[in-house]
Length: 365
Image 1 (cartoon, one colour):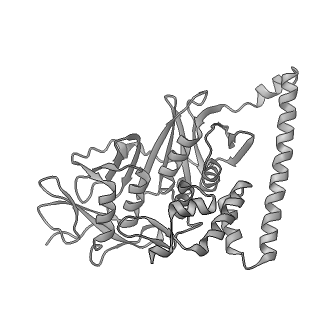
Image 2: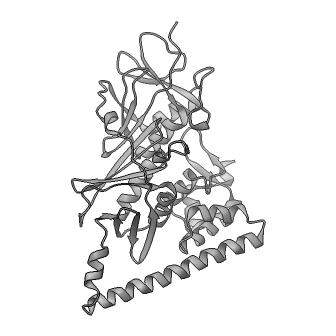
Image 3: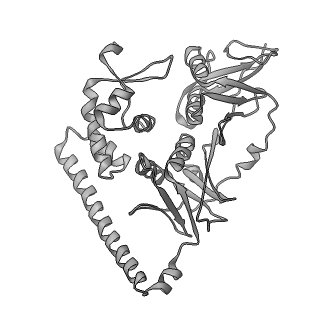
């Protein structure tokens, strides 16, 4: 069957989308492969998906955001709806061009020595510059942990926090926590602590895909502005306080084990979930994986393990997402027991960390 399909590299060449873009669109459920190898995680696509991928590539080239692209794909059988979506996007582009013309006119006035005092009066109190690809990697690392629970609006985005010449990004849904950071320059952002809404983060990820330039982040009491070249992406900041995530960072976990990421994925996908157990937090039912660290320091997946072992239950999908987000061949797992959080680190990228809260396991009989 796979012999009649396209691997992710072949689909990238046929469609004009990069391999990293295809992986991102899969995780965002915008364009999913026809088949994913359970053993290796490798993605396979059907030849009939090439046109759809090319359509996505064209829409991305004109700056259409992911939610709008999803709507176009969902309404392909309704030409009138598609035309309306395309016209709406064209209007936004035209409005953006008008905004750019106004900004360039202001720049011209500054060069001529006019308007300097107005600019100083409206300058954002927080500003920093970061490398585009590094920010893309950091956002990809934390995006999977953003909450979708309307009862916790303060978790419905990514915390942007600046300190010590770096930008830290944090996301949590109370069951998992993801942290990543990236160096920052042009630094006038000490004290920056804003929550960027999920839709803004997704638009930013889409805009950063394939970008190699530095970008500037500005924030004030009301909004966040990311400037990439001549393009500005703007959003209102969430008017909430992000919870104190640092207490989880201070949790001491004495047992560390190095694992091969591919082998761990294979173990998790190949092993049965704990019998009769599911994790239904956040309305998404998932099987529970039981990780076991035996007395010799060997990690395994064993849903039937009982006394004499350090064992911890974890949401299977959350674990696989955290392993993928770590983006490393060798990972370090830190775990102690059934009631302690699990930490997943990439030794090659110490600025990345995922923490998963355990699922309560039945007591050993």
